[in-house]
Structures are given as structure tokens and as C-alpha cells.
Image 1 (tube, one colour):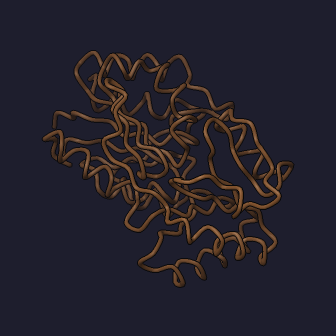
Image 2: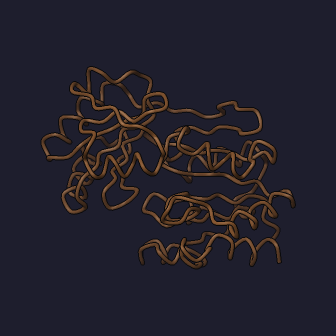
Length: 269
């Protein structure tokens, strides 16, 4: 099979623990692009948090795409145009805020080039800031201060109670929003129907690329759908067993250039 597109999750997949692309992985992906393979960066991150990696990979030159907010927004890097966008209903923000506060957790969203959060010094909020290289502003009146439109909210907290909140909110908001974890401590709250595989399907349909011609690589709960959707679904060695079981192939970890290994094996060779 000649693959025409590589779809990459970022944290735990494309980047190492320092949130950097290693030289070997960068070289492999640049060589793939020179062969005409399109790269899509698919992440729960906001667009601003993905753009530096897109620039490093020269996606504007090779015609790659950013799939931000778990698929809530797709940007064509060559033109800078937004080709798909879904926004979170404003009336859901007070509900999500109240549920987060009642559970003893924090909630955040993205405002311009920064992160707006209910508590700026929370360890999980600070981790999101580190991932995206974005400053945090604390909102004392989160529902009243958020400026719309927004693409998602993120509730953060300890894994066990966060999972319980996930189940509760997923049922309560069925048909109004999608609620799912991207990691043990991150709960994504996005518009209905927003999930990486569905947005990926929208993108490849517009480009005339078949799903069999796509490689999707990830490690998180929010990557499972696109791993199952792609012609070649790849899980990282650092992914959970559930994600690995959903994949066609398991590569090395993000600390061992697992993405470069896939590119070498299935594209360059």
C-alpha cells in the first residue's frame, strides 16, 4: 500500500517528554513529505499550541494540516485558511464550570494566545500551559469572563474522580457535547460529533484520499477512534493496552523515535 497521509497525535507520540521532536523523527517526516506524503497534526491542543511544531515540520511548504481541539478546527497550513470549525455552545460553559467546581476540579479554555483557568497554579493547569507554551490567566468569574466563540473547555483533576465525572457528564450532555478523556487527568469537552476520526474523515474526503491510504499514530484515549479508522492504525509502546489492542501495529515509544520507525518501515522503505 502506498500511503498518502500520516496523521500524528502530538503529546506522547510525535514529541518526547520535553515536548520536542527529536532530530531522527524530524528527518524521517521531512523525507516523507518530500515524497509527497501529507502530514496532519491531530491534537486536543489549541491551534496556537500546535503552530510551532507545524512550522518546524514546514507544513506550510508541503501542504500539511493542523487538526486542533480534537478535530474541532482544521487549518490548511499552506493557505492559513480554516476549512472546518465547530464551536462549543456558550450556554454549556456555566454547566461545565459548576460541575467542575462541585467535583473539586478546575476548568480552562483558550483565549487568544493564552489559557484562561479557574486556578492558575493548579498542577494540571500548569501542565497544559507547559505542553502548549502558553501563559495562564486566572479568571475569578470564569463563566462571566470567557469571551466567545470557543472550541472547547478542558476540565482537569485527579484520574479516578475525573473518570467518574466523565461518565456523569457524557450521559447528561448526550447530543449536546462530547465528553472524553485525552489523558488520565484531562477531560475534553467539545461540540457534539467532534472526535479526531470524524474530522479526519471530513478532511480526506475533501482531498480525495481513501482511509486505506492513511496512517494514524497515537497513544491516548482520544486517539483510539482515528487509529481504528485509518488504513494503518499505529499505537505507541507507551500507550495503554486498550489503545494498543485497537491498533494494527505497535511501534516504539515516544522516547525511542517510534514515529520515525513507522515512517521508515511503511513509507521510506
